[in-house]
Image (cartoon, rainbow, N blue to C red; front, top):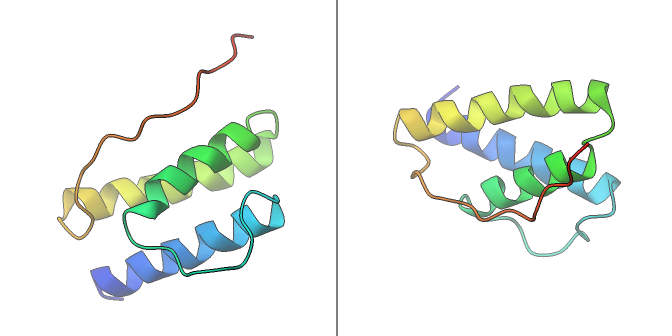
Length: 85
């Protein structure tokens, strides 16, 4: 699978997870830069669901690998304030 195909796969998986969680309505397709923001929203949403977080961590690893190889530009994503446990 090419890096571009990997990126499209990650975008599709993030979009599907977000729609299932009610975080996103099926609408315009995601742009590559949107995937990190959506990933952060998914992590926040599933913070109390360890099995889902484990799945998301693997997705995050794939996103970081695409940043490392230059397929996805590195950017800083501002996330919401985290609640302390």
